[in-house]
Length: 125
Image (tube, rainbow, N blue to C red; front, side, top):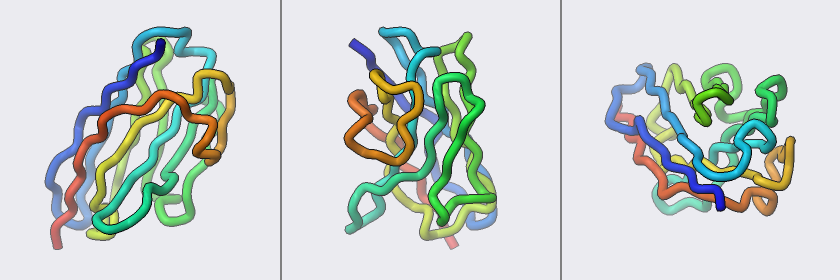
């Protein structure tokens, strides 16, 4: 059974940067897609980005395109979310998720079947 654990959240000023990491264990990491989602205060969970099994394919929500970059290191069983030019509206709990039956999963929430506990990102003005 695949488990994922996020790290790297924290408090940052608007315009700053943070890098989130997500370590996976179990299964064959290099065979499945990974995704990032977030849930802001009083909001529903929303898609942020996804990366396919090889790392060659990525897809982003319009709200983060050009500011966030997702990557993976299959040798380390880890996926990253580099967040630049952060805005207060990026404040949320960020979740990492694995789509263990899909090499590419897109933004389809239902394809992700292993979720982390989340890490808080707070962007101050």
